[in-house]
Structures are given as structure tokens and as C-alpha cells.
Length: 131
Image (cartoon, rainbow, N blue to C red; front, top):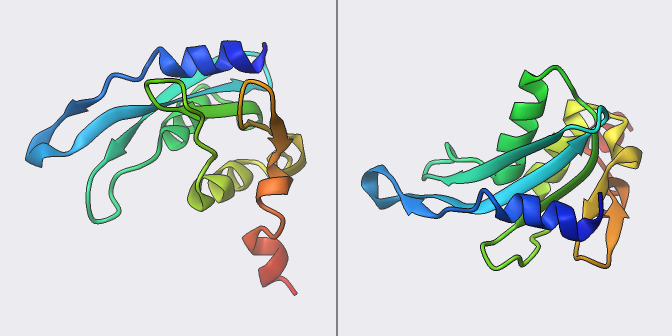
């Protein structure tokens, strides 16, 4: 699947709306391709006190629920298709779900550019902690 096709899959779930206490959900969408080739989707849930989560977390949770851990390719986008690179928490989460994701996950940065997760996460927590 091309970057553009994966970006469009992520855009397909972006449907921003307000929930309780005027918080926002669904303004960022994520699409990922698992090792099986299946595509998993997720949206962000923006709530205070650290209880919300990014779209990448939602898509990864769907993948894990289906019995998979390997992320082959991942992208998160806004409604207009602007690609958002994963935040630090998401980078670590992708890695912590399966250590092979560090060198095996292709992170889409635009329709024309992707990088391996390791380029965005050169020093994962356990490599630093164990020294």
C-alpha cells in the first residue's frame, strides 16, 4: 500500500466532535498495516489529566485485540490530510508493543517520505536504562 493510500485510510476515520465536558475526539486519525497485511484504524481521544490517548494508541490497541503486535507501516493525520509524526509517547508505545518494530516499522511522514521508527527513536528507554 502506498503512503497516499494509507493516508487516505487514516483520513477516513477523522470525524471531530465534542464529548462530555467539551472535550474533543476524532480530530486525528491513524491507519497502520500489521504484519498480516490487515489495516487497523484508530482516532484520538483528547481528555485532560493524561487519560486521553493518541490515534496511534487506538489503532495499535485494535491490532493487539486482533492478536497482532508487529506494525509494518503507520501514519496519523488531521482532517485535511496533514501528516503528524508520532509523539514521543507513541514512538515508545510502538516499540514497547514489539521490540522488532524499532527497525521494522515504517513511519509515514508525507506522501513522499517514510523513515524507520529507529530514526525517530534512536535511544529507546530500555537501551538507555540498561547501561
